[in-house]
Length: 238
Image (cartoon, rainbow, N blue to C red):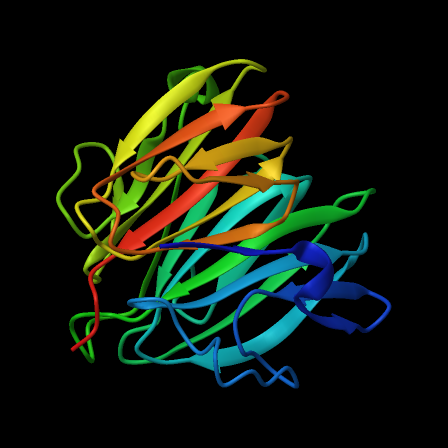
């Protein structure tokens, strides 16, 4: 099953400094049919104005991955962690037993990012934050695991039954991604793709459209134009 979720029909919130679009129920957006997808709980497409951001606020027991599409985000937390994550890179925060953090766009231009929350498979773990400079060229023509609770080599570890993949495709390129029936959710951060299921059904995804996938052994991704793709695959919840 593949369900397209068009960008224009996502939940929306505009605070001036923050223009947010919600793939799942979040903040004032309530949709009982979009609470989670497997262990994936939140996928927000945030655009943050220059010299603004989220002031200090707390989290507990959630794996939070930030994928930066444009610009950069600067993190600081009560544990003393501080760092800047640029476009094409990710940061991972395990909220665990509690963390107080802030996220700011300290750049001169707008920052755009995906904020992705995955429900953890362990409660009360020590809170942590990590970012890694992944080489962009390593993702040319394929999806690469950047954060994973499945032991993928080189990926930032997650306390979750799932993984986040990212990759870039040139127009006309095709790749296949094994899912083994697990729930997956993917969004083209840039460009346009065609998503083909096992039955041959094709779903066209424009920039920022979401696709909820389940019970597919494998999917095929075809780039109609140069594309940057982010995919999260998790286990089904009992």
